[in-house]
Image (cartoon, rainbow, N blue to C red):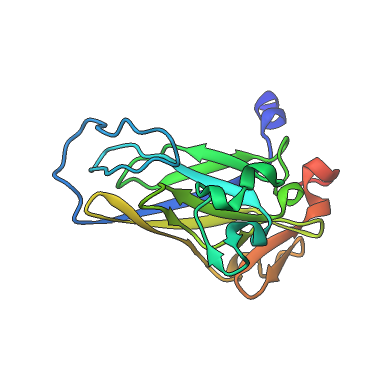
Length: 193
């Protein structure tokens, strides 16, 4: 038990809720062999699909400061900016817990915001969500995905309010929507959480 406790790393947790409307007929095999987050595909029940989260500044996800584009769009030039990407492969019609090991990665070092995305021509992307800065770190998120006719159409961060952090002195409520911990309390920064 002690060995296991020492090996646990701080993680960003993502609960992914996948909703579907008019998916293709049910099959039990994974028929989706597209693994690039910037490639378009359609899926059916039980398929895996590629979902990515890009980390950068909030402004980096907008072209000419007004039009939000997919991180796959070369007009954003994310590769030349201070950005990182995490790639996941959840399954359609399953609730998935996605984690990012933050013992070696600090979202605040890459602009502090994230966008979930997939696809290029039929790009689906979330709005930028605050993750971390030098003062606060949000440690848990819920991402809702909506499929229509087998194609991922919408991604959005579900805000659960701050009920989870009320009464816990280590957490604060940011913008009446996210529970955050002081970044100095994180293990990576010498804290205990």
